[in-house]
Image 1: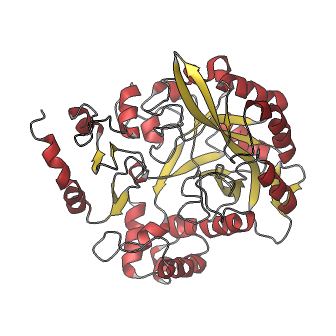
Image 2: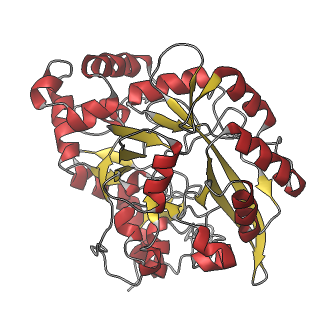
Image 3: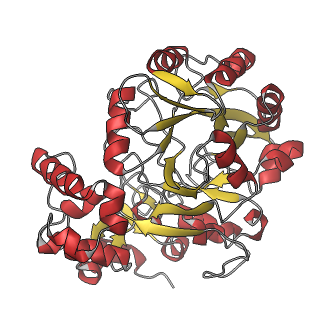
Length: 429
């Protein structure tokens, strides 16, 4: 059977996270999206652990959990994200990691061991004063079946390859524990094709997940993994990742990396951006307004580390599909540019009508025929979904914390949006 999984999200105990990230609302968002398996998020936090144990029950022999009440068809996997602060060559690094576990009991044991490295209850995403290699050792000492790998690997801050305080290789981060790392979470601002340009990453399974901070369907499941499994279980999911098995891990679902908040470079507060690596390099990566260093986007950081040309695909690479949240399509006006708020009541009513008519958002975006879509959606929305499947929607790239903007009138909109930047390039070669 085919299963859609979002293996990284957060609870309401994490900073900058919606108060609606409670189990009931997470389930509802996952159902609308079309997910089957979701990470619990924040499984080391005392308060969230208590809520999980109160609301979920283990499914014997699977390493997964289901709600005690109702039959939602949603399964939970014990999961958390932790940050590590450590020194590399005299510079402090701040790298985040995803940890997947086969039970909440394992999470409780890990919580006990890690409590001496930081306060696990200050935030659902705790920060630990520990070297990543030691973290890996502790995680696997408690249970060899746990998985740990870099979270949102290319985000400028708090990521393994981030332009602000990241490192240049897996070995710099994980040292003698590198061989115990089997995966890499690419994050919203990069996709597999960008990671394929770095030969040292070929041996790692590329994972996509939402890192959702709210249960809205345009957040949860916006990136995901698609599995084909004989039996849905933690062990099967783990093994397909560790073995990089394309017969079981069929593909990842990505948003266009330009949609991510850190794809291009720039300075949001100064109104400078989005800038490609080539454009930012012409400025010496210095902001022409405040003269401080620009926030280098993921595209620029990839260019710094890449040893292959764009378009290279390594043998055995697992494929991917690029989508956008349905909310973004519904927000587009007749001119092909965003007109409605993603949070508007009218948009939400339209979203629920379309999704309930087809079955789930993934079915709307991936599976439904043109004829099926025409029964529940106006022509411009049907046309937009078909264009999305064909890769014909352009994104004005996100930068320095600003989401990218999808448009249909792509060339005109892109050029119009960037007109104000041109003066800063006058006189540059």
